[in-house]
Length: 451
Image (cartoon, rainbow, N blue to C red):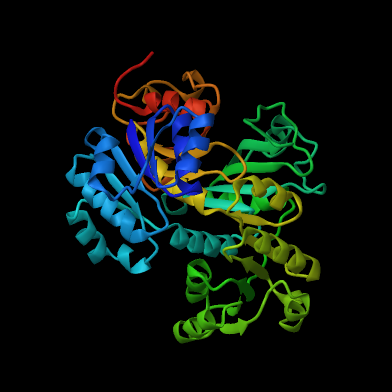
């Protein structure tokens, strides 16, 4: 696929590198010439310096040949204009990043579609909604629902006392033959791998699991995890993510929101009805203690400073908060943040990539999740009529190396994948895949035979 990415920093660069790994032809347009030179020195990505909303710049990027134009600069007006102009100049599909939640209302999205903007994405809104889901599934480090929860992705950090630790997958399956979940990947010592039956779980492993709803209690039991009943929540940072999270939760939970800027506090006080707004610096331990941090069920740090979010979460954990969630915008810090004890990491680059990447696949992708620790994706693919994946049971398929089928959804029923299972056309299939395997996986789900 021929893809043009308009960016002004890390989000565009991360997306470009990720899509290049999946064998797309990428051109990135960015106003920062020095940053583009750094990108060119380490990749084969074509770069153009300039303002992406300028028709001449888009023409220089050969937008008329673009299968997809993605605009993810920080200014939403630039993104909307870039997508609209690009569509007029011949781009087949356009995606624009926005920050105003009102733009995502149904009546507004139709207006933007009429202007030539096919899709809108708001990482801040998705991040807030992810945080709310994580509070509902408080035992998980990371979670994602497929087909409205028929199947879910759970990521659990294994402690030494977990039942599965020092046991192989084969042993666990023998002892627990009625399992309603399946491990699809393990992250250990900065490396990820797809486990075989002989692989043994170890303490501090991050285990990625596909589960049915009825499998969640057993999954948590075997992982020695317990759900935390959420009542009292402290949020640090009153930006779009913090505000939306508080707005969604304040009717059912007790929310305290700490914001450093006084003017921002005034705006939050006008917008939030039941949230206690505190004007202060969350790095002040005395302030945290005065606001009863030791009795908080969850502490959520979503300021625009990654270091502040990590440090305040560490303080909150030490002082007694049961669950910590941090917005970590520097991808290289994700491993560090989790290794020092922060429960869950939110990253807007990965959120944006998860949303946009599903439009770049040749097979029909209904949902997609880019994983926080692993350079890999969990994809919900739809099996097309007469596609190779429908021809044989799973154990007889030529599943590409670096990929793994975790579960299947048929109508309103979910199945955990087994070797004897026969996938049918229109089934939704959840697949874990490293970037080098994705194009091969897609061929299995398309209507033409490739064997």
